[in-house]
Length: 567
Image (cartoon, rainbow, N blue to C red; front, side, top):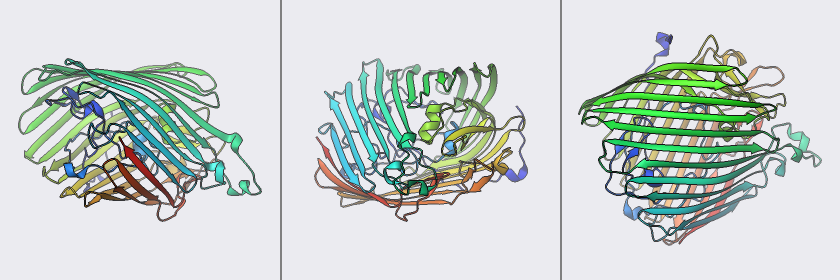
């Protein structure tokens, strides 16, 4: 592994950091034998709570939390890693696509069901529903449905409309020794390739023959140890995803993972993580792709220091590319706790990331029918930072990392400039990425909660588009807030900024600088009773039809009024 670092590239900047405001769904909240993905820290709790939590992702119809119970911050730090190419693309409830999750009333087991409806301009309609069946302390079954659509869009009326529909059934069961979790879902997303000259719509022109619909079927399940204080803990999961489009594009992915830990003594633990990704896609011709990873490691810790050391062994196969390659990466991390409230950490690693149409289409709904797929390899990664908390109302993280990549993915125009393909950078000369990221979380008297997130990426050695990182922002910033008045009204002003965006012109192959994005939003929820609340959401208050992807303008000022009922 070869790593080249310029002195000027190692610039330590002040960042802000938090993690853990969002409560994990279901059994991952308070589960005996809970295994986290990053450091695989097992936290033992006395009681398993199977009730899922409400998610803020479903804007604008988010239900008001019961503030009389107090909204305590959850301090749960972990190392944020460059998971896949999508981590460099901002995906928020405003700018990016939303994903479905179970919904349930936040007022406890008395109100296990929830229905939300809403309507707004651009022909916006929403319907969310969650229905729990026979909830018990050891068992919970639920059905979730979601409809979110705009009959009209920013260009050509209905020619740029969109719709999203989803249905999901799931079950969580605690047997005393094991926790079983499973779900099955179907999701359909419909869009139009409307990224073209607006004059095409003059005189009643239509592009309805250029629809793109994604149909996604998913099944997943997991089993985990639930015994308290067990020396050996584990969680094993497996899932199948099948994605199809109206252009006869097909992709199925079978992924499985097992995470395990053996507590040798109070200071020493052994970890073993195994992962498998198998996929077959039909983009004109059929291709089989596979990725296998195994990560054994050891952790030593005491009151002031923890050291992790291990290896990451990855094997990837690609039938059409004739590829069968194995790579070995080190896993090294040192975490020092100079005080009770501060951690200083440094680490070294590398990874092979599995890329798929399912992933790319979730970020960019206007993909071409034949997409170039290959995996991204992070050949090296050096990082360090500081994180801490006063354990009352403030926590933060500051981090700097330097990575080198081969086959780093970028969205570029396909032969039809209204559709996107993937172009990869980093062959013999690796793409170098300097990342500065941070988050800060601050809460005041259970009434005001503010979250600031910052992410900066500097790219070097991109061999096209004049060296510009097309489709990936240089800087992403979000500032979200929740202010509670008299335990009945929650006002949520949010600000999103994306800067340094470039697109690629299909005809010339030249990059084009895109306008920075400033997206200001305001949401107000009013709790009328414990069962009934109303909400108003106004997004993109500045009314700018900005472009996150070249030629695809977004809606200007848009608003939605909704009501929610829990029972």
